[in-house]
Length: 215
Image (cartoon, rainbow, N blue to C red; front, side, top):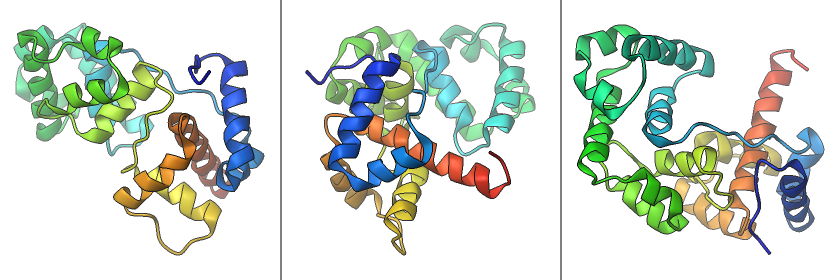
């Protein structure tokens, strides 16, 4: 049986150990940082908008900006975002492209073009297709939403630079795999590609922390 509850430490540990037995890269990551906690985020429109806001920013900076957005809106909903003054959102720290993206998604949710309850019940492939059909949601955003907000264990954001860099570091290669090649590389981690992604993220985050003089 391949289905797992990623928030269950025992089930996640079994999946990690299964990957480590068949892949020396994941084994090395496991030896270095153990079993990571699965990243969980609230779902729905709020969760999707939050992912957009956090892109390409440090966690600390993004959290500060998002905190201002929540204060400004009271509650982050499609209606509150569409009713908000754009300059007020800009003052929170959101860039104009990100505002355009979260507004586009809000419009899709309100019109029913994007049904996040339907997405939650759909297969990974169907859910990804419905998400990326909306302007403002790219493949990376869709995959991260499925992983963090819906707990999908076999989703693989192959264009994520942190993942490919972690793989490069462990494999001791000179260059990172380009996204298409990395997608093919990830096939060996089915049906736990999302678990492998968490292992690689955990590895690179811990290495960076060690390089900064942390634990």
